[in-house]
Image (cartoon, rainbow, N blue to C red):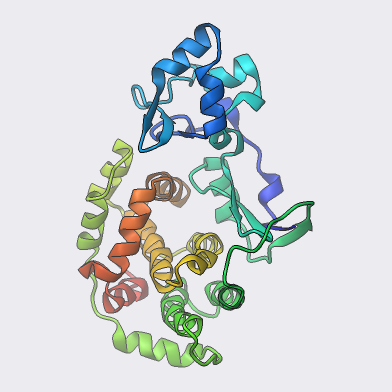
Length: 334
């Protein structure tokens, strides 16, 4: 089985008790079935406490949040389960976070979650680089349309090249990404493949662009599920800044993570818009980009309902029409 991963993947190290945040607070950790069965039969005080705080809804088990944190989180910033039973006793989510895996059957892609502060540092400072590859035993039957996957792999490389082209400003590169996304969707649908003409696309973008409404865009995000008071505060009191190189790195991370997922439903364009709306959101909120991007990921990427809401809004919400999105991406000041 082929495993693809960014070159910074193996450099990740958990800051543990020195972490400025914690993966043990402000979101409900889903517990895999095997761990849930183990916890339900665990004897002693720890087992009793686990059974008190685990909850099951819609067939899924998760850890309750008490006072904004996982009840297993100790005052020293470490996990009670790990401290008493060892790392192997952690549930799948806690054992692997912030590492993530997208398994496509005959190959898998590994990555890191931006919602972890240490991972965010690696992601947002990473230069453009191809994924590294290694071979491991195992692998299953491809669970995808091979023609669609080939198209998506090829178009993703072009998108990454567009996003990394510093002959264009960050805003121009993102705007070009939107127009290329439209072309890539057409090719995925069986249209004729053709080279992407960045010069002509920029002229088209300038013609299409219309003034966007940042307040309306931020208002949409205020209407989503809010996990932390900090996120609500910065949405209500934004401090927008300029486009910076870290926005390119953010766009590359999102492209690597979400592009191939279109093989499941053939809807690439909504994911392209999700990528660009996310970059725009981080710019609109402003502040320290490492903090803002990490908090964005915790609030949006770690909440499936919020991701789905943005994918729907990419087509339906008036703040995110193509012309308004282009206008905000190309704007030097917001």
